[in-house]
Length: 279
Image 1 (cartoon, rainbow, N blue to C red):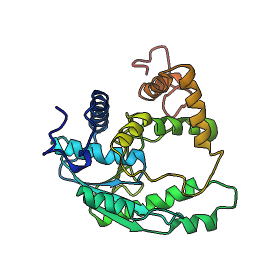
Image 2 (image 1 turned 90 degrees about the horizontal axis):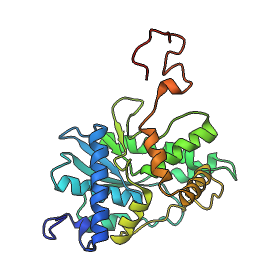
Image 3 (image 1 turned 180 degrees about the horizontal axis):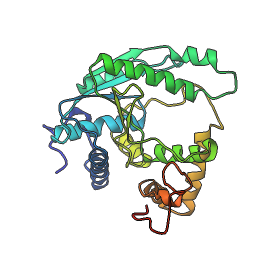
Image 4 (image 1 turned 45 degrees about the vertical axis):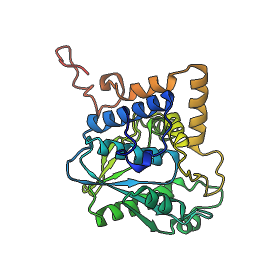
């Protein structure tokens, strides 16, 4: 049994009882737990700042973490956090009302980073990089103020894969979003527990639960963003060869430094006929 209606967290009240939804929920719970265990995210007794944007991914993250905690598999305190960055038409009451109704401990803070971004970025350029830096700085500050050990984000498998290709195509490096990261100051972890979860599953889950989704295009249309271009390429590959996304994602977990070209990862100059343990 996935839940008992009188015991499960309010975030799951009214969950569909269909077989398909139960399989979906079970799969997301399993994949999230795998990521948490595989990348060593749990420090018992600590506190996590769970970042909630109001999008499908962050709602999925919040619900699944609370289910794992309810099941005794996540011995940490969870504090939901929404940073209202002052985007025009942002529905500021949606998340506080939802979190209060669900009985989820939370902090909502207003910081007008939108005006800063609009002032600094020339017309026609994309906002995302500066906006992300300002958001990250505020979230780190809030985490410290709340005594949290980690900032927890809702990035999923497809975000990680898209970032890899953005770095490959535009950055000239092999890199992506790591599931676990220590910040530059060395005092906070950044976790991505949905690292193994497909975007499509997040969408199906949050839609089935009828969570109040806030659109992610409040900054205005920015057609031509690198991420959207990469997403379109991956979508086409997936249509032509179903399962291609998961195969490429598996490759990120199966690297061979000796078969790449980075001398910082493998000592090519020191390679000799007597070398052992080639990797």
